[in-house]
Length: 52
Image (cartoon, rainbow, N blue to C red; front, top):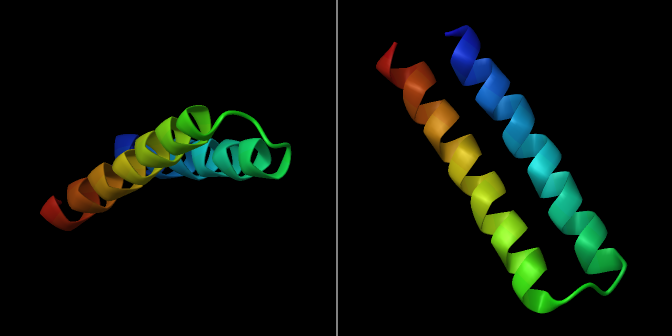
């Protein structure tokens, strides 16, 4: 369960990094990669929390 919360926190941080990349006009592929990784981490953590 602790692992799921760590993943949720990490996913939020990565999504924040994607937002920062978007605001500072970094390459679109880097922003997209960070957003996909962040959403994947959040989805995996929610799946872990629901699985128990």
